[in-house]
Image (tube, rainbow, N blue to C red; front, side, top):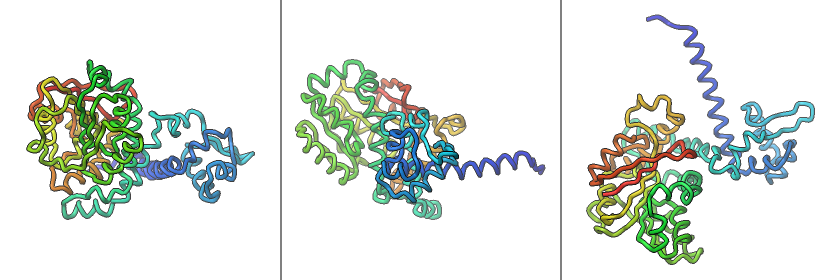
Length: 356
């Protein structure tokens, strides 16, 4: 077998670059969580002392973080004045004000997934899965993620994909969000459409309780959150109950996604609409070679989406179940009309508008 030394050298260099970029991702997450990027964006340039004071952080740690950000080409450094600056072009993708383009939000998944590496390795050896309870910050990070992809665009981009839904919500209908997490989207809709009635369901008692507490604090009486295992939703769902049902990146996490889809179809009134946001990818790995988030999505799937389903004895569908399989499962669930839309600001998801 021949050995191509040039190819080997290129691959070795790529691995070194991968180590550097992985390290940069960790530091970007820290910069986001500590508010360093937001503080930096308000300073034309700064020493490590000035930036630490602005952000209210320890200078020694800020200085070392700046070293990683400088050598990682995220932050500029002036040798003469020994000051640092965050280019406006970089700030446009790293600060809270940059939302929905704040990529630093997604960097948080890297340390989050790393925290369960030992559990995942055990699953590689023995099978099974890692339960939701092992992901200490998942719902927090997912809420930020959803805040950029869905909450930010629910009125301007997502609802307009569904003809007449805004008018129906204004008049008053029954709506359900399956896998609602912290309920940010439905809390927003409930406040905006007081005549409609909203229900959020999620497996986690912790997040549904938090969502209900927020609804109560906002004085919203037209919304409720229920902790529910949906693995038998097809049998337990009440027929013809809801006019509008949504799932936001939730179906592929389910223990029994087929049962959930059948339950949604059963729960939907004859003229109702189901809107499913889910991962934009192909079911065939070969078709995802040029996907801008390919390695990231498969990694998130392996270390979260797939494994939490397997932990419940589920199907382990995975995040990259793909458009082809999604359409097939929707038809098997009883849906006949499936329209798929893409939004310019969202490179990660597709938006399915579905009817019985």
